[in-house]
Length: 316
Image (cartoon, rainbow, N blue to C red):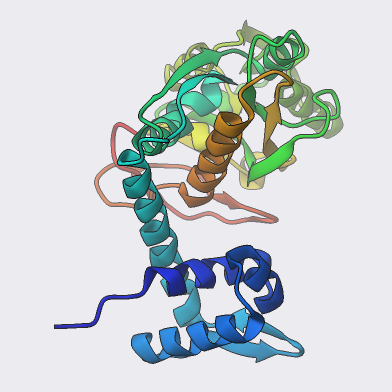
């Protein structure tokens, strides 16, 4: 029978990947640098492949190292969740989290499931509001933590994910070819709305605001019904949508930064634990690319725009 992997070695391996240094990782796992090096040599022997390659004075992960990192994160996380489930001294109390509904549908299931498994005694209260409202609720101490779209108006947030902001239309309609482009967008203070309008103004494209709503559900309904074009982050895409690119006459939009803002009066240990879970969850969530449902759109990657079909599982 194959010898099981050592969780201590995997935890050290993840720390090296996260800190970018054997020395900083040694401080993170409370070991000497020589002990960390020994752990990695043994891990490489167990895997049977080199995990690190010299890059000048630093070490970088090999392709096998990157492959192992994905599994190592899962194993370390599952171990932490398992231990927490049987810990009589685990965190207990309440926490109030806010997020726009653009992010709630895509991110909250993963965040809530993982956090609840690790902290079964913590009651989570969730508020779905636009970013501007969430910032105000934090200021009033009515929220403990919020997942928001970072902008100059929100203040400094801990950025946990970046995504492209995309022009979207219905895959079954040609509304984007209208001479006066109908838009479904957020209210005038919405930064995505401002970015879209600025881009259309620069390109000289005529447009009119047909639907205005804070609700992502309303905006998505307008798009899928073929009534309007909108702008959405990649996480908010749905089957039946088409992403519009430069070939369709739509200029690239700026990427968005999804960040965490903390309140001033929440239970610090619980807030720290939830923040860690959010960061880890968003780091592991990616756009599905499975067979099973046609999702016809122009795919835009960071800094590049290319046309390729992507298959998405229905219901995402």
